[in-house]
Structure formats: structure tokens, C-alpha cells
Length: 426
Image 1 (cartoon, helix red, strand yellow):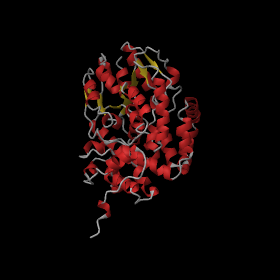
Image 2 (tube, helix red, strand yellow):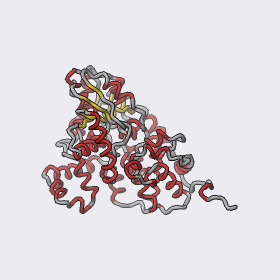
Image 3 (cartoon, one colour):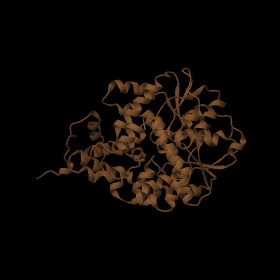
Image 4 (spheres, helix red, strand yellow):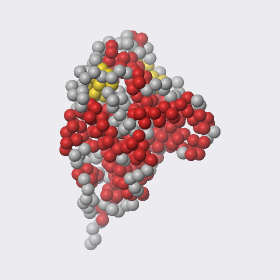
């Protein structure tokens, strides 16, 4: 009798320790399907290939040489990397991390060049170039050029991704956070990490964090940090992520005793994950561990450094959406609810499916707009069902998505970053 080829365990192709571990981890998926009841992309589409089980088996087939890389790209690229599947998986298969590696393999097989690689490896690590480019694009937005192109359907004709990006970023900031906050002294208690969202999209978030620190009497400031590396990880260019991590580690090593405070949960999770970027490089892994252990999500800071808030801060009915990188990557579930419960006068209502991804996923809302909107519509319906005036979250990509889907639903609910809300009471 010939053995079922699907039951034969094949070794991973020769490669790095990460390749070997990835194969071992994907083999732990027993295809039970329990994850399909929670996966936001499967719930939105009903497509088995867009479920964690389907994605893991596609990745396994690719690693075993049974699948052409291009045939797996849609399955890998449409994963939100939210991590909810791992939280309910009996075998704890780290599907989000496996999908990042799968994307890397697909792109390597199709050639490592291209505009995205240049952007991630050359432009993003250089603030003068990256932020300068954004300022040029923002100038066009302020003049109404992008809005007009969107209204005329030009952006959709070029790419639905451009249309989605123009809609998501409702307004362009006048200045970036890097230009508004002072640099940290060498003996600073806190280094305020310049995450791309609070720095370049919503600087009011970073200003709110800085205000809270000032009220608490904390000596803080910014350092010359760059993007945390999450886009490289998301797009399957892990070397781009390592380039950014190395640059940040060098900068943050200059503040060896400072807490690294991060007011975007997606970035906080990535900084804490830097050691994983260097599995085959013991020296850099050690340096990454020394730095990342000092990283603190603003949710952790607020929980351990409570604010004395005025009653006017809570004259609202408030609900809370868990950013996936807070809940699943960092385990921060009780912390925001605990300090929100202490806000005078606030009526807090738990959000149905608060643990479900909103569909933002960093740049996912631009790169996969159709699935993103389908996932986001469900989130908007749940928010409206609470009767809340405000929905709070801790990630800028979530914030952009929530504002976008609530606006499309013609909802009056306002979405705020949690530090913006708390800073109102000080």
C-alpha cells in the first residue's frame, strides 16, 4: 500500500534556524478548524484558503516543494497577522509569524528587487527622506489634489490601494511629532519612541503622551529613532525589518537606563519582538534583548502610573477596542479596562467582539481594501450596538480604520486614541 503523501513528514528545505523552526511549528497544525470560528478574514469571506488552517497547510505545501510560490501569495498576503488564531489554537501554532516568513519566501522566489524593497530599505531608515516624502504628499493633500483625484475616480483607476490610503488619512498634520518634542537628555527617565503613526499621521497622540508624562513629573524626550520595522515584517522583507531594528538599537543603547515608552501598540509589540529578528545572529540578538526588555506600551505605563483625573474627562459613554498587537502580541487585556474603570464619571460599556480585529492591520487597510472593509463593517456595527459616544484604542492603524468605517456607516461615535482621551482630564 502506498502511503498517503499528505501524511509523510518531509524535512524543511536547507536554510536558517528560522526556516527549520518554521517548518516544525507549521507541522503542529492538526487541521482541526477551531481557528476558523475566530479568524476575521475567514468570517468575512468564508474562503478556507483564507483561514489559519488553510494558510498553514499552504505554507507547509510550499516548504515541501508541492506548491508554486505564486499560488500561495493570496493566502499569505491576506492574513491580518492579528494573532487571534494562536490564542485559541490548542497547539499554539504562531500563524501570524509564519505568514510573515511565508511572504518573505514568496518575494525571494519572485526576485528580491522592486520599489517596495528600495522604499523599505533605503527611504524608511532615513527620516529626512521618509518624512520629507510624506510632507510632499501631504502638501498635495492640503491643496485638495488627492481628494479631487479620488472624487474623479483617478486613484481607483490607478489602484484601489491608493484610493483606500487617501480615504483613510483624513487630514495631513501641519508638523510631525519629531519637530514638536524636545530630544531626551542622556539621563532621561523615559525615551518617547517616535512611532510612525503618532509621529507622521496623528502627532496629537504623541503630544497627549508627552503632556501626561509632564503632568506626572517624568523627565522625558525623544531620540533619533526610526520606524520600528513592522512594515518590513508585514511585507515579507525581514532584512528591511532588521535594518531598522539595528538602527534603533544603536540609538537606544545611548540611553541605557531609560524606559522606552511607545504609544502605538503595534510598534510596542514589534520592539519587544526585535530579538526574534536575529535568530541567526547571537550578537545582535543579545543587543536586541537588552533594549527590548526596557520597552513599555503606553497601556502598561498608564496602568502602573495612574493619573489623577478630573471628572470632566469621563462625561461620556465609552467603549474600548483591543488592538490586536496589544491583546495578542503583548497580552494587554485587563490593563486598559482597569484604569478606565477609575476615570471619574465615565460609563464604560464592553464592546461585543472587542477581541476581534478591526481590519486595519497597519497598511492592510490600503493593501487589501475589500477584505479590510468587510471586517471593519462588522466592527462598526458592534461599536454602534453599545450606544457609546466614544470608542478608544491604542494603535494608530486601528484608529484610522475605526474612523473610516464609522464614517462610512454614518455613525456619530467618535474614535480616539486612549491617551488623547485621558489627556483631556489633565
